Image (cartoon, rainbow, N blue to C red):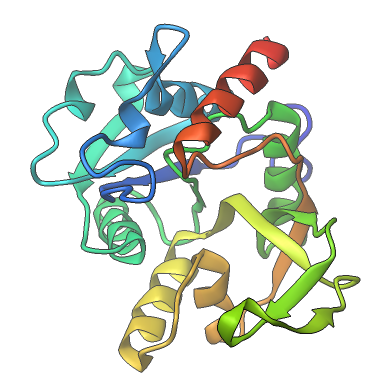
Length: 237
């Protein structure tokens, strides 16, 4: 991977937390197994990440999931599976614990949403390059574009929020295995609110860089997001 500096062949792993119920998408259907262009959303996501020179990828799946292990993922020989947890953060920690048995704590881990299938190779390379060059955690994010309002009871506007320094976090989020594992364990122990990997790293005082991503790196959360993802993947092709 010629775009990487200082470390031509970094050891990269990916974690995909895929054990959530996705209740905002559907009460009965999992969004990662919806079909786009004859492949599931999860297959598209894995294929995008496998454009990087990965040592392997770990899917943290639900106990009742009988689909994931049957899918024809790209680079199937690099696929690993572990049991997910009650929340996303628990699934990520379970996957980090699994990885700790086969990887060094100084190796790099990218955590990516299973239902974010449109991430581009340029963004992935920029993220990896930034994290390795700076030797610190990094995430993809985009500047907030729209005017933000703080809304109180009865849906009344309390104030307009200054957006000049606000960024919308995306994934992947990248850190060294050992650092991220310790951060999540400490944050959970302290009862901190962990909305993404960066928030756990911030909790223990780790510096996290922002790498500007793209607005088409959408996360499928609601049914209409699936239609948008179909259009984006078609356009990217």
